Amino acid sequence: MSKDMDWSNLGFGYIRTDQRYVSNYKDGSWDEGTLTSDDCVTISECACVLQYAQSIFEGLKAYQTEDGRIVTFRPDLNAERMIDSAKRLEMPPFPKERFLDAVDQVVSANREWVPPFGSGATLYIRPYMFGSNAVIGVKPAEEYQFRVFVTPVGPYFKGGAKPISVKISDFDRAAPHGTGHVKAGLNYAMSLHALVTAHNEGFAENIYLDPGTRTKIEETGGANIIFIDGDGNVVIPKSDSILPSITRRSLMVVAESVLGLKVTQREVLLSEVKFGAFKECGLCGTAAVISPVGKITDHGEEFVFAAGMEEMGPVTKKLYDTLTGIQMGRIEAPEGWIREIK
Image (cartoon, rainbow, N blue to C red; front, side, top):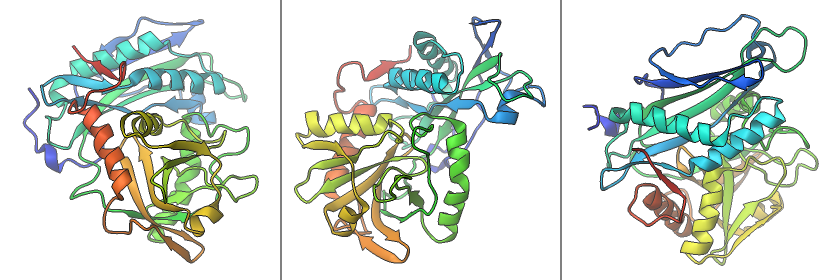
């Protein structure tokens, strides 16, 4: 049973739930980990995470299906991506099977907080890890804490997925050979000024170009980008600096294997967008699945996609409906995509 809440009017914010998972790394190994009701973190004022931002995280969701099961969507990919992030930031990887078990434990312990099917709300899951011991010289920490908490969140789109307006950013999201391809907290800290600037100018998000030539589309501050060309094919920007979004990777499989669309992953030039090569555009990520983009502005020069500013484009809508159908159990999932919480 879910808690008695007004699920359909939840916002996208933090609500404290009953239990979270904690495991500590010390003297070269992770302890056995435990669930706890304590939602506070106590660390040294000189903790490495506070001094040098040694922090990584993941984001995924638990859903209640139409037949009452509680499931997560491809958590194995989150576990693998967090291992990659840990290696890049010189942190001890948290083992994949332990990651999956920790997520299972926390969702199961908070099952009353999983929103009911049809409410539009979901249970957001946030695994994260940080350097916890005191470090004053620039070096990796020697002790770490891995935690998982959950919070119910409302539907990302209230009243339907209306297309958003985005801008080409003057800032760079990631440096070549930097950390753009891993989910490090520092990447998001660096995007905040650009995001606030965009919001103040009336835009929902920034599109970042490649920092080398500033001619190629990469991604936004918090989502990968997909385009639909004039023939209804899916085109995905390709770059070593782009975070490998699990939603985007899943949409590529859905497009090709379920909907029979052609999918191409390649470098995408800003000039192609301006010349009208694409009819639809969307930002994809865990929170919204796909946020349709109706308009891109580049220093006053506006380009409105053929799908317009009123509703999600037809191909984007098919992708959205199919993937959310898989996540909610209405459509049969590819093997291994759905993990049931007992």
